[in-house]
Length: 485
Image 1 (cartoon, helix red, strand yellow):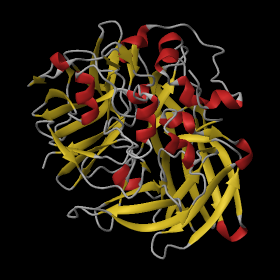
Image 2: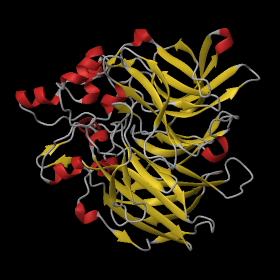
Image 3: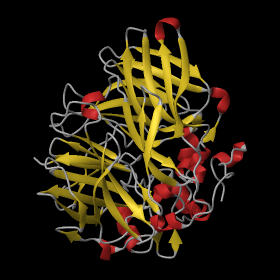
Image 4: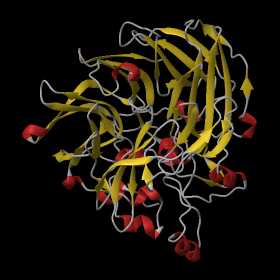
């Protein structure tokens, strides 16, 4: 199989890893028999009285269609999971998103183009795909609550709405003004709407930022800028003043995408000579500054960004890799054989528009991915704490990490044989401090071959409670906590 970064000679590092197979359960598929509703899970410890809502997550849970396997972790078919909290107990429900892509797998077919897996096509079929590409609606990356609506997303322009109580699929949520987008929108404080980015491909390629307000059926474009070869961007930054567009040197010629000869991500090329380019777009006027060019690097996730007028800076924090080979390391065959991923660094980029300068620094001496902050208090603003996941000796994600950016230190939670997912921060109502709240993480326990929901005190990572799920939950990506309405 040809792969994206292999052509540039970049390979995911494998040295200094200890073989470990406990994580493999996280890449085993679930079936329809795992669509369940459990009113009360076995609970150890006790929950805060104020925790009365739901943690809802989306992620890949089926990695095969008939006799054929999907190629990449990002290709697995989406399943929703909901942990509900109330009266000191935890409930659980799970259900596959009923998308066209999922329906095809029920027939044993791969009929839609996923991140790194294409349908089997004849020469005629590939030619027809030029005129009618079959983009996947497999919304397996993230979800957002917009007013009373819940929307699951991936990087194709087909967001899927669902019912938060029944987890039933409702259909396409809105039309994205482009072909490539992100599953990491931001909340617009002024309107309560959702800000996101998309790349419009055609005779004139554009990056487009759009806003979907809570009561609107369709989004509107609020800013755009031209681009010849769009970069792969999994997220973007936002300050109170600026939209922050970070273009990593992992780019695509749109004609390669149009040819339909290779899976989506395998059309991108790592071009380090381009450097990393950051453009600032004024949210009010639409005026653009930059691009400000720095060293080549790659990132999936922005952590936070904020304006620092006292120093004349815009600060942008990201989880950074040296190059895009991390994408190759997430192919299923490689994950199932080595389990390791390259280390991610918590990096701060400082931009000084008046001086036309840009520089970066490492914030903590620890591996760091899947970041979460106290969004209600700190989004777009200066902040101190961030929670994430770090790798262990095996190279796989084994630790929940709390970073103190003021002290430049980290603390962690881990348990032998356990592999935690994203740690979602939930703030204590009317809490006094930035880290006053709990963390919610879905943890795979390789010893019992099941998963459990872990509840930690966000300030010191002490365990408050855990609730055992009825089966294992494959490794997923992102979720959101919804307070009871």
